[in-house]
Length: 103
Image (cartoon, rainbow, N blue to C red; front, top):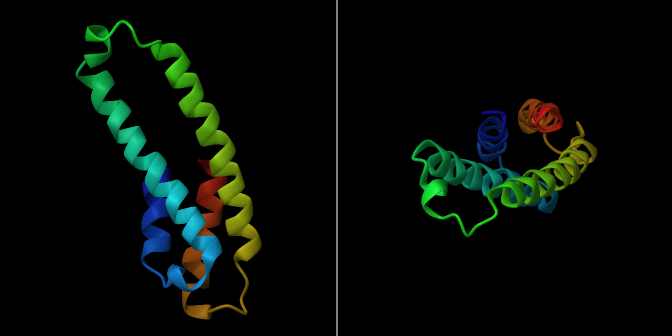
Protein backbone atom coordinates (compact mmCIF):
# COMPACT_ATOMS: atom_id res chain seq x y z
CA UNK A 1 0.00 0.00 0.00
CA UNK A 2 2.81 2.42 0.85
CA UNK A 3 4.64 1.54 -2.36
CA UNK A 4 1.52 2.44 -4.31
CA UNK A 5 1.29 5.68 -2.32
CA UNK A 6 4.86 6.58 -3.29
CA UNK A 7 4.10 5.78 -6.90
CA UNK A 8 1.00 8.01 -6.99
CA UNK A 9 2.61 10.88 -5.07
CA UNK A 10 5.47 11.14 -7.54
CA UNK A 11 3.48 10.33 -10.69
CA UNK A 12 1.19 13.28 -9.95
CA UNK A 13 4.12 15.69 -10.31
CA UNK A 14 6.55 16.63 -13.06
CA UNK A 15 9.08 14.05 -11.90
CA UNK A 16 10.46 13.46 -15.41
CA UNK A 17 12.30 16.80 -15.22
CA UNK A 18 14.55 15.43 -12.45
CA UNK A 19 16.42 12.14 -13.05
CA UNK A 20 16.49 11.24 -9.35
CA UNK A 21 12.71 10.99 -9.23
CA UNK A 22 12.77 8.79 -12.34
CA UNK A 23 14.87 6.28 -10.37
CA UNK A 24 12.43 6.45 -7.45
CA UNK A 25 9.51 5.86 -9.82
CA UNK A 26 11.27 2.88 -11.38
CA UNK A 27 11.85 1.26 -7.97
CA UNK A 28 8.32 2.00 -6.74
CA UNK A 29 6.57 0.71 -9.88
CA UNK A 30 8.87 -2.31 -10.34
CA UNK A 31 8.43 -3.59 -6.79
CA UNK A 32 4.73 -2.77 -6.71
CA UNK A 33 4.18 -4.90 -9.83
CA UNK A 34 6.31 -7.73 -8.39
CA UNK A 35 4.42 -7.54 -5.10
CA UNK A 36 1.08 -7.87 -6.88
CA UNK A 37 2.50 -10.78 -8.89
CA UNK A 38 3.65 -12.63 -5.76
CA UNK A 39 0.39 -11.82 -3.99
CA UNK A 40 -1.56 -13.48 -6.80
CA UNK A 41 0.77 -16.50 -6.76
CA UNK A 42 0.33 -16.95 -3.02
CA UNK A 43 -3.41 -16.27 -2.93
CA UNK A 44 -4.10 -18.79 -5.71
CA UNK A 45 -1.62 -21.24 -4.12
CA UNK A 46 0.15 -21.60 -7.47
CA UNK A 47 3.42 -22.07 -5.60
CA UNK A 48 2.26 -25.54 -4.50
CA UNK A 49 2.01 -26.63 -8.15
CA UNK A 50 5.62 -25.61 -8.85
CA UNK A 51 7.67 -27.41 -6.17
CA UNK A 52 10.92 -27.12 -8.17
CA UNK A 53 11.17 -23.42 -7.32
CA UNK A 54 12.71 -22.70 -3.90
CA UNK A 55 10.00 -20.25 -2.83
CA UNK A 56 11.69 -19.44 0.46
CA UNK A 57 14.83 -18.34 -1.38
CA UNK A 58 12.76 -16.41 -3.93
CA UNK A 59 11.03 -14.56 -1.10
CA UNK A 60 14.33 -13.87 0.62
CA UNK A 61 15.90 -12.48 -2.57
CA UNK A 62 12.82 -10.42 -3.37
CA UNK A 63 12.58 -8.88 0.09
CA UNK A 64 16.34 -8.35 0.38
CA UNK A 65 16.58 -6.60 -2.98
CA UNK A 66 13.44 -4.58 -2.22
CA UNK A 67 14.97 -3.44 1.08
CA UNK A 68 18.22 -2.32 -0.53
CA UNK A 69 16.66 -0.58 -3.54
CA UNK A 70 13.88 1.07 -1.51
CA UNK A 71 16.49 2.35 0.95
CA UNK A 72 18.60 3.76 -1.88
CA UNK A 73 15.50 5.29 -3.48
CA UNK A 74 14.45 6.81 -0.14
CA UNK A 75 17.88 8.39 0.35
CA UNK A 76 17.92 9.69 -3.25
CA UNK A 77 14.39 11.03 -2.88
CA UNK A 78 15.09 12.71 0.46
CA UNK A 79 18.28 14.32 -0.80
CA UNK A 80 16.56 15.58 -3.97
CA UNK A 81 13.64 17.30 -2.25
CA UNK A 82 14.34 21.00 -1.84
CA UNK A 83 12.16 24.07 -1.85
CA UNK A 84 14.29 25.48 -4.67
CA UNK A 85 13.17 22.94 -7.27
CA UNK A 86 9.45 23.61 -7.46
CA UNK A 87 7.18 24.70 -4.62
CA UNK A 88 4.11 23.16 -6.28
CA UNK A 89 5.56 19.63 -6.13
CA UNK A 90 7.43 20.02 -2.84
CA UNK A 91 4.72 18.54 -0.59
CA UNK A 92 4.20 15.49 -2.79
CA UNK A 93 7.92 14.82 -3.01
CA UNK A 94 8.40 15.26 0.74
CA UNK A 95 5.49 12.91 1.48
CA UNK A 96 6.89 10.35 -0.96
CA UNK A 97 10.25 10.54 0.78
CA UNK A 98 8.70 9.82 4.18
CA UNK A 99 6.61 7.01 2.72
CA UNK A 100 9.68 5.44 1.13
CA UNK A 101 11.43 5.25 4.47
CA UNK A 102 8.37 3.50 5.92
CA UNK A 103 8.30 1.04 3.02
